[in-house]
Image (tube, rainbow, N blue to C red):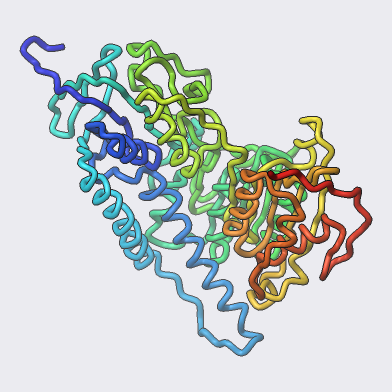
Length: 481
């Protein structure tokens, strides 16, 4: 500490104002703690990448692209919408209004809870102290009793494709495009790349996806990705798999695909090759904390790293998803308050907002077998669902994984319209230990896409109503007393 500098005493310090961070701050306030949040952008940073530059903005773009493409498809049903026109400048204003409303709401929640927010870059100086370099260049010192690290993640960068804000963009920059590019190359066909590539193709760009793996969405079961691959082909998206992106010169991205060199026309290149946790400039060694080689902080089940220090969100192992951070945050704060708690969800759902959407929760059949279970897989196509047909989106399936003998629901994997909403039913079923009989006997609204989940459960129980029900080994009802 600089001689004469007086450190501010802080009861609970939260580093990062994203979903995990502000959730931790609000939980701390609920527990009666005096909470200070440090975020690089201060109150402007509240909501983090998810609300300001990731989840919400990307879904706004995806929704606009989907509406435009679906409206054009209704010409054969009698709807005439005229010539398609895309004004990304107007979209940016629309996006800003949505983001402003949501982040303003979070700021109001923090203010009402008495949580203070300070702008600056934080670095730990000793186990109970940190220095914050404010935007004005001042060094502010804080001494804390407990700290929650929730600094989130940033897009990974390829050394030969460093974003320049004009011709080479990361996923954040892609959502700030002022004009629709004629040609786009998306490097990386994971969920971010597929979502952005699909949206831009629907709006009118000529899109090429470049993926090092042998297929798109390599982290997801191939059976779930096939409808998305077919849809990309329908949209005119070129997909190069087993391919490595090279340099971008002029309007050409040089790609090595198999044993051949390919020149991909690309006015804009979007690099979407994953994210890296923001743990490398915090001075964590002063806390006695060492990140793994991947930059992640390997927390205990209660999300603590050592006494008085916890971490949540993208800086911890597991899926880098906002809803995981929301769920971890109260556990971490309760642990710092002395409670004996554990973050141990039965399942964490994940969604790809592609076309069709993919939503998955729980175990796949292969994962169930790897755990020594005997899975039964029941698959129901979306093609026979009335609501999917009225949406002109009868693509995809519902796949229900259950345990032979008990009928316990082990996993739900949905490809199709509104999959992101349907997966919550599977998450609740897994957490509550529900069986396929429970789902089959639960009345679902007609007409909805959700009826396919019930139909899958009926078929799994051997009594499908609108589908064939092959003979199954009997399910024994669990004793729920």
